[in-house]
Length: 347
Image 1 (cartoon, rainbow, N blue to C red):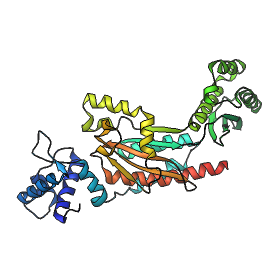
Image 2 (tube, rainbow, N blue to C red):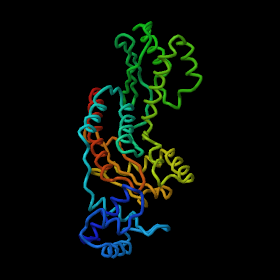
Image 3 (cartoon, rainbow, N blue to C red):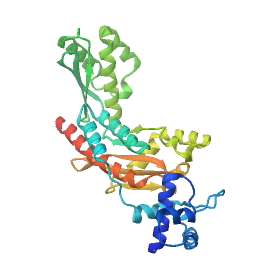
Image 4 (cartoon, helix red, strand yellow):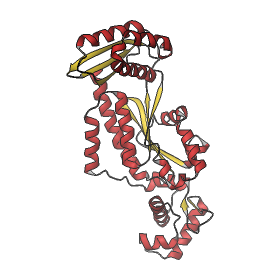
């Protein structure tokens, strides 16, 4: 349903004010702050119509109104104007992505941190890998004084690498020995097959290189784990708990429990893999009834035109959609470019 211009202006004022203050909005507030050129009495009449139409609602304890899920949806689809990132924010994002990026996991974790840092909401990053990986080969390569690169190859075609710090006493020959033992023990093994007894054998043979071995084994497990399906990275988990809507202890417990359910989050994020641009799921549009007080703004990223995953922001239904859409769109473009650059090296 299309609203006339006056109703659109009143709805927009209510939503903007409620996003900023988290307090129900009255007609006098709108008349004073938003200069709509009509009296508080006229605004009250428009608010009554908007409430009857389902775009706003009245909390039990207040004479003011707050947006409904339907009101937010109308705002996102028809009224919202995208916010703009400052030059400093764009520069910070560019520098964060283009420097010291070692592997895919690091890029995705950094994406989560940046999303949450820019918006103060909780970031959710989904990577969608293919196949069930088995370990194929590892190589530890000496990169200069006190540095080495660990390269792990899986039989599904995945290549993961990471720069690690090593003691000065470790020589290239030592790295070759570690590589040989790991390849002998682990070749053809999936993550389920790397049992504790096998790990103990490796540690016994390479007891003097435990520091390096720990990092190599971590990368192997991570490489095989991400090959088994979808993986979720979260950033700023506690940001959403700072929102007034979630000061209730029971709501906090429920929300934290939901954030632990990776499969559920993956299903929500996978839902936008084939969608174009940035999309939002608002309140009751969320798949889980327990998330009806939340919204998510999401977009998919791609490599070579093929969707590889999605990124999103989880916040209250009162979230600042204009800024969230802008940040997610900008981050999606940058993430796609960085992933192209990283994976292009491996081809």
